[in-house]
Image (cartoon, rainbow, N blue to C red; front, side):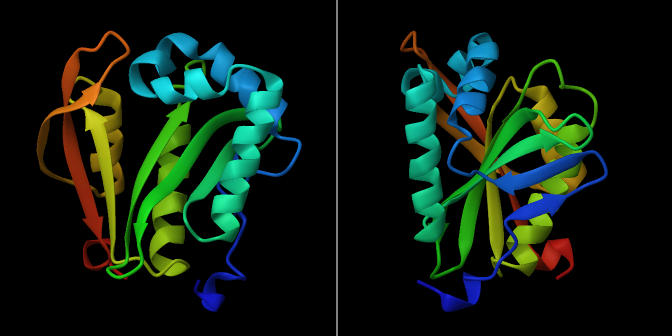
Length: 191
């Protein structure tokens, strides 16, 4: 465990969002977010739909993510709209390898909020947090080959395509799909 990370920011502010570490009691809001986006999440984050199937399960999920944060195993944030103060998304730094150091980022946004530029603001703040506060040297991002909005977002924030991972993702039907791998280094980011 790195004591230098004990005082990192737990809330990141952008012009329209507050991206903050989950707290105890956020489980019901997270459950409602997952339930409201089940159709999308079944294809992209099927484990979430399976794991977060009640308000209590949502709270258990949030508490696990909070414990992982405290152990510096992963960093999960909820995305709240700043004015409305409603939970509209989730972004997660995981697969941390402190020997490099590197991490992978994944995210989803309430489908009613898609296409408004919120995720661009959020991902830009998470990239900044990753390089400046966590002192990572690299961020990776994987997306389904047919998830064009996520690919555009990755490129807009500075990620570069590094390759394809064939048959890497199984949808609930059992069908295998390819993923595109994107990466961004501290040097490319300008840190």
